[in-house]
Image 1 (tube, one colour):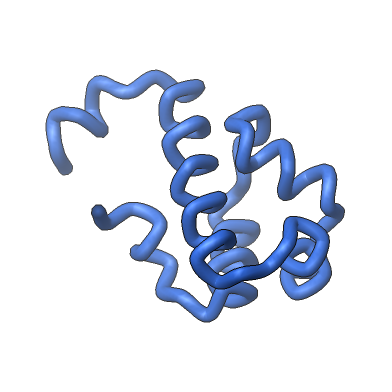
Image 2 (image 1 turned 135 degrees about the vertical axis):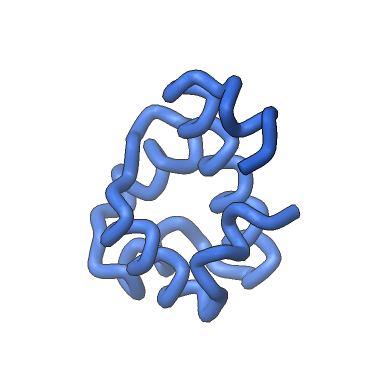
Length: 78
């Protein structure tokens, strides 16, 4: 684990995940609503994740990765 990840606060980690989620969603060319539908989540929850206001569980991250057709680790690898 890198020293950057060890020094992150929970809020920083949520914000960093949200940025990666938004980047991956935009790269896939889909809306928050489409992503939410594919992942069986509410659109407002996806929005909250992207803004770093939500702390998604591992199960939710897997749903989002599957909905984006990416590997879960793509959220964490630069």
